[in-house]
Length: 599
Image (tube, rainbow, N blue to C red; front, top):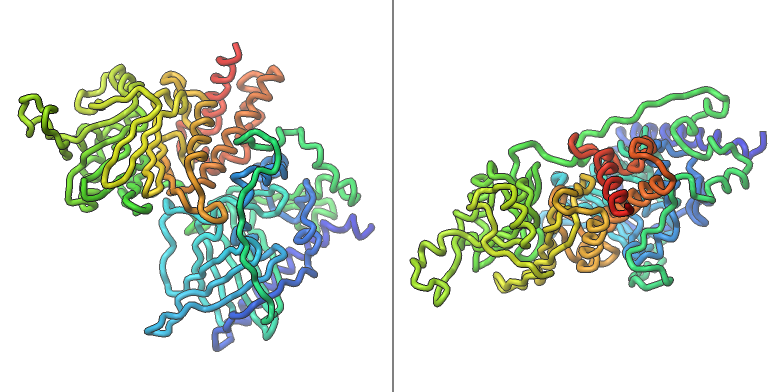
């Protein structure tokens, strides 16, 4: 057998060797008596896996990765052209991949000035200039609904002279730079071991969405105290003439490059396609080594918290997010009072009011409904009655002013008012002020509040609310971080309208450096987000829509298209939090919408 043909076998041996390395180092660390200072400037060594890390892997080169079918579908649909899209150009290497690139690294300690206790170990990677804090002061990881970042949230402990780090709250990233995905539910475990001027870094990724077992890699560094790590600014620029909001991707079975690597290296296609079997010597010997999917680790991020929980999270500026298992509210608080975006179910009104009342000494003044569904408007009457409107002058027209101002005003697009009226909703729940144009503006708590209608999206009456000075967008249910879009066709919803709404949010938002932070986004359901999360969601909707449309153009029926699983690769994140709205439900809704509009 040639060396090239034996490569899957070599990868298998390397994977087993790395597992042994982790065990040996940790066992040795138990006898060490002191922590090791990792501080310094480090230069990487690439002798282990130079072809993957420097020129980069080929399309279709997935061997040595225990990926599952969903990950393979995502990888096979990935197009490198996505990197030229404005929203993707400045996305940095996330924490689990940053140490793999051709980058220098600086490590330093953050020490409390008064106690001289170690607070954090900090790292900077030269590529993209990413910085990361590894908290050493015993703080807990944030709740699942907290914002996710490219570097995640890391805590560390010393096992003798080995620094062991656990990282959660990572934005979706990649295992390999050819489209192999890593989900936001992944947990990253790392071990840093210093021996004089050499640093070994071992990383273990547990990802129940895309990996069937832990994926282990190692990197080596050499102390280089005289290097200079320069700034790394990134400014997105139009690189080609493709239309705005293009989402490059390959439809299933249409990626022409997947066989090239196997053919050039004279390797079996099954071997380079990845999967746990390809990591072990038994695969080369022809044995069928079957493995089951790994269960989620304790501490992994989950889509919801337990029922009965109401949590208030300060977003930025005057804006807070009220998170519940049923959905989110947005609260704008200041000296003028409270403005609420949506009110959720009536059964939560008292609990929600108790949670938000301390945010302002003044009462609820406004409620804005982003759409008509009772899951977001059921608390209208109960919360409005706890508020108060300021009326005066000719507006009273001789009517008792106390009676007129005895509740908050409820604002919504007229299509939302019509839908709620048609559904027979109680009069106290109905909007008191409806607008029929494309926007309505307020000035409240010394801040401009922009309400924009999103036509024919999740319903015909969807609106977003943008708090200009605080720089926060409340989206309603056109964006939900852990569910496929609910397209309510009976209420005027369409898949293209959802895509248009997501693009409108992307156009309105301005991200911070490296496509993170900046404009913050409160979804109708799920975790606190920013523009990159909406981009990820928009890309998913476009890709699934295109797969379904391709099936329709080939003459396939709905059952045939559902059997082809066009949501494969996205079901873990968006299709498992509810049994009444899975990937199959979403596919059926898009199918009916597309076939209706093509008749």
